[in-house]
Image 1 (tube, rainbow, N blue to C red):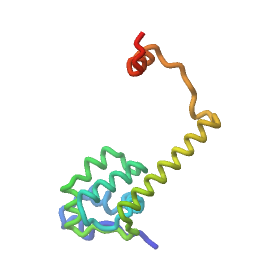
Image 2 (cartoon, one colour):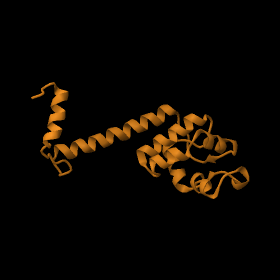
Image 3 (tube, rainbow, N blue to C red):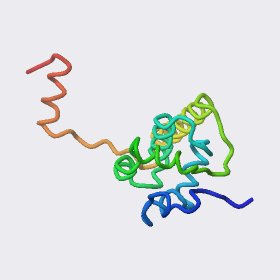
Length: 141
């Protein structure tokens, strides 16, 4: 099934070519698949879930996407009937998937560490770092 995403006649609705390259593009559609969002019902909730989905996958630079996806921009998308033909999911289902991904990453990292595959190498701490840590431990020398 092809992915249909974006705004029709976006230039007429006040979007720039750059805006349309973002919100009508395949990478944004990939974020929608992760986020489980095909329409904008609540502007702030949509914005936050898109940013969180991108945070987990970083298809776009996190800081640049956050600057672009302002409340006003997402409201403009909503007013222009932006949509994407992806399956929608509840916030609870999205959160469950995020937890699953975090746990899978944790299990992989732990397995890598426990089996000493070389990802983690213990390096001696510099003296400055030891002093800082000792202040947190309450064992200032």
